[in-house]
Length: 340
Image 1 (cartoon, rainbow, N blue to C red):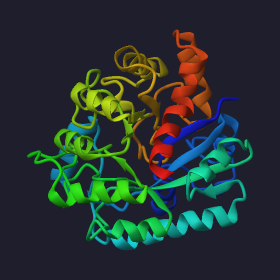
Image 2: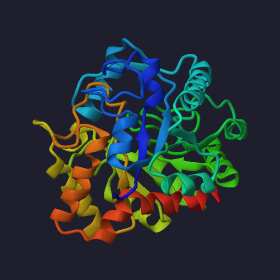
Image 3: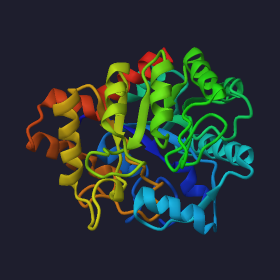
Image 4: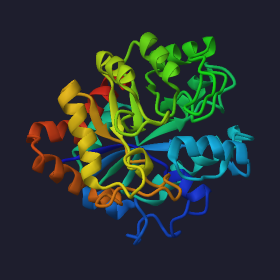
């Protein structure tokens, strides 16, 4: 079975938000309707998951929900980042307790750990990722998070913060001075920079100054669905030149509009990336356990069905080597360049 790397899952959010819309149960159980858990990882050949720490809190704010509707074409609650430092610590605590309780899980400290877990079909590695830099008062705070195990950081979520503009920004001022310092600090420490959820200008600014390959961990293509949450051709061109990768998500409204997205729709986007930029840019970034009611593509509703994606890519004309690059090799290249 081909090993799989998933560049984004909100595992701690599942526990923080009372299941996030899914049935609550022990993570070692194969729960119907839950899109990720340990049995599904093992069944799908998933060896490494970028385990997200999202510090926003759901609230009621109609104006924010309106901006999210423009991103997703679906009503979702407002989000505030009040108390994000406490949420960060609690979610770190969740991940460390998960690996203590479930022997199949391992937290990744460096590239050697990643190599080891990719070769072990009985283990799943968790690479800790901070989704949005709101908890950092200063770029140097990333040093502290590194010591706590964080190895990947998203500059923004949909909102703007002191480091840059998010995808829902009305005025896109791009990366701030502090944001530039955050990117440089991440490169120096060996923390992967992720520009998913960033505005177009923020993404381009980060790619211009990054000295190591960058991730777009979970997004889709604006050529197919015109929403600021998706990535346009200019950003993809810059990402390709940077040597980075994009993990295509399972967020249905970013893949198709007016109907439920299908696996075929998602594969169309993979094929476009392959035909336009070559075999070294595409990866998998599902956003499972973080969809919060947004529908996944029919045929890829849970992480064990990643085998359906890989089979469909072959059916649509990609060779074994191309599929292996999408499944894990492209992501692994970026991880190695940053963590070694």
